[in-house]
Image (cartoon, rainbow, N blue to C red):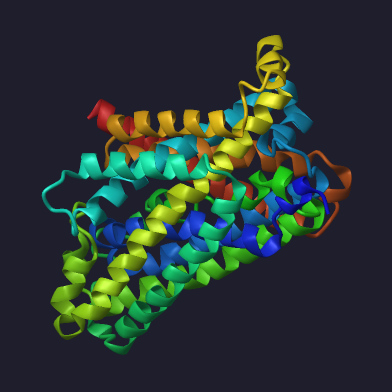
Amino acid sequence: MTHEQTKKIGVLTATIVGMNAMIGAGIFTLPTTIGCSLGPASIVTTFLVSIAVLCMALSIAKLAALFPEAGSFYIYAKQWGGHIMGLLSSGAYLIGLLIAMGLLCRAAGINLQYYFPSLSVTTLGLITLITLTILNMCGVALSQYGQYILICCTIFPLTAITGMCLYKADLSNLVPFAPYGHKNILFAMREIIFGFFGFEAAASLVPRMINPKRNVPKAVTYSVIVVALIYLLFVAGLVLSVPHSLLCNPNIPIIIPLSTIFPNVLWLLKLVHISILSAILGTIHSMIWSSSALALSLAKLLKSKTSKALVQKGIINSKTTVFLVGICILASFVTFKNMQFFCLTALFLVFAYSTSIITLLTIKKERQSKSIIVTLIGLGVAGLIFIFALQGIIEPLIS
C-alpha cells in the first residue's frame, strides 16, 4: 500500500464526518427554534425535514455513485447546465457552508463563555476558528482521528440527556401544540433544516475516499438516518420535559434552562454541555476539512489559466485552501446576525442541492426508475425551503 493510499478514508470515517457535520449545528439551533418559533409542533417539523433531507441525501448519494469525481456539486450541475451552472452550484454550496460556520463560531463562543465568563463571545469565537483552522492545516490523519474522538464525546451525553428528558416527560407540555401558529410548522423548516446541513459532507470527500462509487452513497445515507433519529428523540425529550418559554434566549447555553428542570443532576448537565461544545467544535472542524477539499477540487477543475498555474506551482494546495476557508468564515462571523445566518445558509445550500439533483431528471434511466419519486419529493421540499428562506431575507428589508 502506497503512502497516498494510507491517507484514504473508508465509509465509517466518512459517515462520522457527516454525522459530526450535522449534529453540532442541530444541538445549537433546535432548542432556540423550539422556544421561539414552534413549541411542541417542532416534533412535526423535525419529522418533515428528516424525510425531506433523506430524499435529498439519497439523490445526492445517487449522483455521487454516478459521477464519483472530484468537484461534487460542480460535476453534478454541469451535466445539465454546463460549466457556468456547475460553478454557480458549487459556489453557492461553498458560500452557504461558510455563512453557516460563522454562526457556529458564535455558538462555540456562547458555550465557551460558560467556562471563560471574562472573555467575550466574539473573542472566544475567534480563538475557536483560529485553533480549528490550524488543526485542519495539520493534515488528514489528525482530522480522521479527531472525528472518532468527537463523535464519541457527542453521542453518549446526547443519549443521556434525551433519556433523562423522556423519563421526566409531561404530556401537559404539549398544550398548546402550536403556540406560534400552524403556519410556522412549515416556515420553521428553513431553521430546522440548518441542523441537517452537512449531510452531503461525505460526497465532498470523494478524492479522499476508498472506493468512492460504493462508499459515498453508503456514508451519506447512514449519517442522515442516524442523525434524524437522534434529532427526533432529542426534540421529543425537550418538548415533553422543558416548557418552550425557557428556550427562547439564543445567547445562553442550553445547560441554563435545563438546570431549572433538573437541579439535582447538575453533574450530568455539565457533561451534556461538554458534549454540546464538542459537537459544535466537531461541526466546524468537519466542515473546514470538507469545504477546503471541495475548494481544492474546484480549483483543479477551473478552466482559468491563472488557477491552473497556481495549482501546478503548488500555491493552491490543501493547506492554503484551509487557510482561505478560515478567512471566509471569519468574514461571515463578524458580518451576519442570527436570522440572517439561517436564511442565507438555507438559500445558498438549497440552491446547490436543487441544481445538482435536477441532473437526475435529465437521465432517462433515472426518470424511468421508481426512485424518481424520491428525487421529486426532495426537489419539491427544497423549493419550498428556498422560498421561505428568501421570504425571511426580504421581509425585514421592506418592513
